[in-house]
Each structure stands twice: as structure tokens, then as C-alpha cells.
Amino acid sequence: MHSTLRRAIPWLAGAVICKTVVTVFWTFRDYFPPNFDSYFLSGRDAYFFGSYRWAFYAHIISGPLTLLLGLVLVNNSFRRRSSGWHRRLGKVQVALVLLLVVPGGLWMALKADGGPVAVAGFTSLAVATFATCFFGWRAAMARRFPSHERWMQRCYVLLCSAVVLRLIGGLATILEFDNSWSYPFAAWFSWLGPLLALEWWRRSFGTTRPASTDRYKRQ
Ligand code: HEM
Image (cartoon, rainbow, N blue to C red; front, side, top):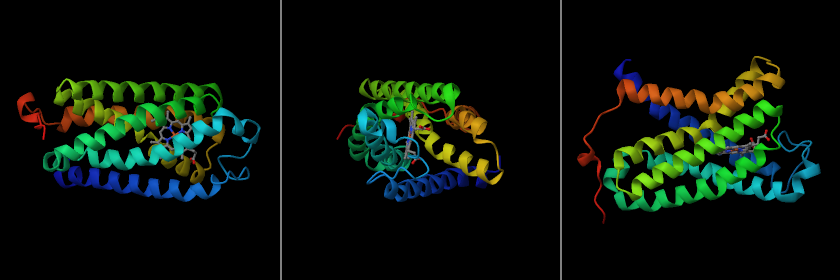
């Protein structure tokens, strides 16, 4: 792949992620207070006021924050310049993902639109996100930094499923695809697609650094 294009892709991805975060914050007008005529909440008034509400608010507030924090944390030059901040923000990220984003998403997955295929897709995403974050955190604690980096990249790509899901949704609307199959498809493809792309990218362009050079010093 052309090296300019290869350098441009992370910047482009960062811009799309930031744009998604702004769009999600903008949609909060429909959620505070809940507007049951809005796109996502319509038809959910029957169960919204139970535990679903807590899962929903925990999820939608923590989700965008993890997308922004992740952008900083996966940045290698930031990690090299500010390893102390990398560690502090990393702890916040792990807590947000394991305690809020994933449990909230898992609870909401049980009521997901799109039937059992979508329910299974979102549930699997929740399990995979929890596992990658947990393994990444454990590797950092054990100072196995190359492994930590790999797991956390996977975790971030899984968090970015929220971005890909919205891109697929936009494309499906433009192309007038039937939501009854495009949404269940998106519930799987939004995370499996980017995860496979990451593994391919790592194998094709990844640097193989010796473990010793990957360690950052404790401050
Ligand atoms: C990676 C773990 C995640 C899982 C398992 C997950 C799961 C879900 C599920 C199941 C729903 C409801 C879908 C439906 O009922 O049709 C949902 C909605 C939502 N998710 Fe996530 N999600 C994850 C990550 C994120 C992230 C990183 C964000 C950050 C933007 C996010 C933001 C939202 C928002 C704002 C909604 C409400 C619907 C909307 O306004 O579009 N999620 N999520």
C-alpha cells in the first residue's frame, strides 16, 4: 500500500471517530429527557423506566468518552512523551469499559432491535470487548507491554464498532436497504470486519519490536 495512504488512514479514522462522538453528544437532546418519538427510543417506553434506563445512560455517557480516551491511548508518541498520563488515563479507560460500557451494552443487547441475530451479534461484541480489555489490563499489570498493546488495540477497534455501525446505518439508508436484514448484519459486521482488518494490518505493516524496547519506565 502507498506509504502516504498508509499514514493518512489513522488520521482519517480519527476524524471519523471524532465526528461520531460529536453526533452522539448532539443526539443527547433526545435522551435528556427521553423523547420516545426519537429514532432510537421510539417503541421503548414500555421497558425504558426499569433497569434498561440505568444501562442506557451508563452506556451512552461512558461510550463516547472511551472513544475519545482510546484515541489518546493508542497514540504511540503520546505514550512515549507522557507515560504517566498514559497509565492514569488507561486506568480510567479500563474502568469505564469493564464497569459501564460493556455491562450497559450487554443489558441493552437483550432488547436490541433486529431479532435474535442482532441480539447474538451485540452480545458477542460485549463479551469480546470485555475479554480484550481484561487481557490488555492483565498484560499491563504483568509488564508484558507488546501483548498489552495488541490486546488494547483490539479492544479499541471493538469500541469503534459504534462508529462502523453508524456508517453502515447511513449507507443502508442512502441505498434504501431493508432494515430488517441490514441491522442484524451490521450488529456482526461492525466489529468482526474491523477486527479482521486490524489483524491483517498488523501482519502486513506491524513493527516487530523486541519486548525490551516496548517497556515504558514507571515515573
Ligand atoms: C463495544 C461495546 C459495545 C456494545 C456491546 C454496545 C452495545 C449496544 C447496544 C446493544 C445498543 C442498543 C442497540 C439496539 O437496541 O438496537 C447500543 C446503543 C448505543 N450505543 Fe453502544 N455498544 C458498545 C460500544 C459503544 C460505544 C464505544 C459507544 C460510543 C459512541 C456507544 C454508544 C451507543 C449509543 C449512543 C447508543 C444508543 C443509540 C444511539 O443513539 O445510536 N456504544 N449499544
